[in-house]
Length: 220
Image 1 (cartoon, rainbow, N blue to C red):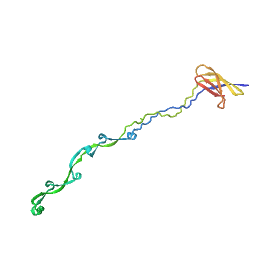
Image 2 (image 1 turned 180 degrees about the horizontal axis):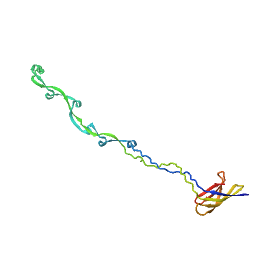
Image 3 (image 1 turned 30 degrees about the vertical axis):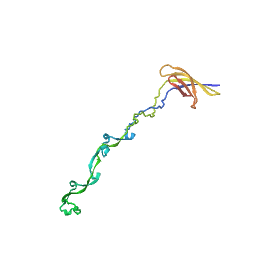
Image 4 (image 1 turned 90 degrees about the vertical axis):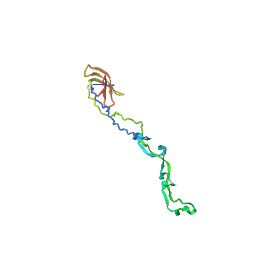
């Protein structure tokens, strides 16, 4: 069994590692358009849609009119409405051919006159139109955006460590222990023990745990 005694001095500066910071950015709110989001309702309301003129008996009532285009025509014999025929000679009376009497003078004419009928009134009623519906939509709000930024922590001098590495080379390979004096930048030195040898990196390193700092390693 072979022992090798090596004296090393391990400096302990600590370098900063990248970290992730969060930067807040405000999201811009988009205006809401109710009709596009919620659709439409069809309503009949004069205050919203205004009014329209309709000709409807159910809504507006009826009236009596005398209009040939609407009610048609009928035949009447009336001097007041159709005028008169003037007979100047009884010989022109057809009635005398059958032994009747002839009333010479004016006789009422017959003519077609407009009939009377009941028609629907016209009136203003509420118009029908589409209005935007009311519905629940997601609000616009400010949301924190996450991004990655690198923050470098400046080197800090925690002091120095001077110790001894006891290395043992045997059937199980390289083994060893580390111990020595840790001296902070201010204050008295402290004896530390229980260190170890790290072999995973391909180069042997001596590692010791410093109170308040953590484990520090240095190659030897």
